[in-house]
Length: 160
Length: 103
Image 1: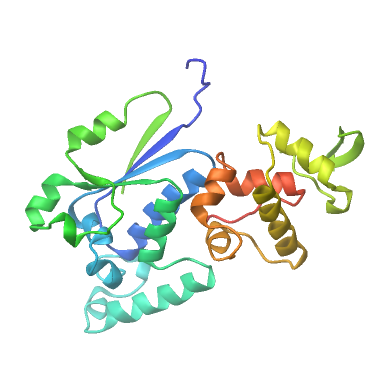
Image 2: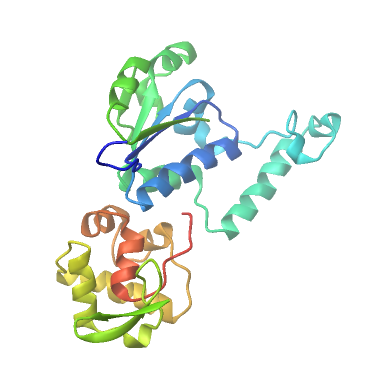
């Protein structure tokens, strides 16, 4: 290590999923970095783009199928209304923990200085335009651009 | 826990430098703790510090979200006033415990 003694300076967080638990994990990690004086940037790719899609970000769900931690048989998890029910329960718990909704959380991240980037390839794949996305997004990047922004010492990258 | 002299007065602090007895705090100590964090306190800083102390006295847990809804300061300005780890830094200057919040 150099003169920084391995100090963490910036977190680069890639969000590729849109289930509520993954979105919140990514948001808490980005916000937590800023709270510790560490810079943070987020890259929304593939389904992670839903977390910054103006209309869809209000309707994110937890996954009840294929999620062993739900402790629910797969067939039950697949019944109509199960995901909505589980999501309601989770949101209720989170409200008690003073966790903001997705849109408010994006506002908090933005005000805290987190850079928010959408992935160009995923935008093209889903036929999203920048107008479809959260207003205060910092822009649309290629993966190469994102790597460029990750250069330097004390930078860590996280894929969710 | 240990004792150290801040601005000429003996003060109890923990291993991270947070004061452990708020009754020992005064503005001179706050100013000195701010100087140690490379900050010069403006009237805006003091308003935020007073807000944090009021919340502490009322036993309200602090979080970035609550700061944003305080009506005293918004999150953006909070980060401008205390650029490096704002909630921790401001709490340390205010003489109150380190907030345990993740959000």
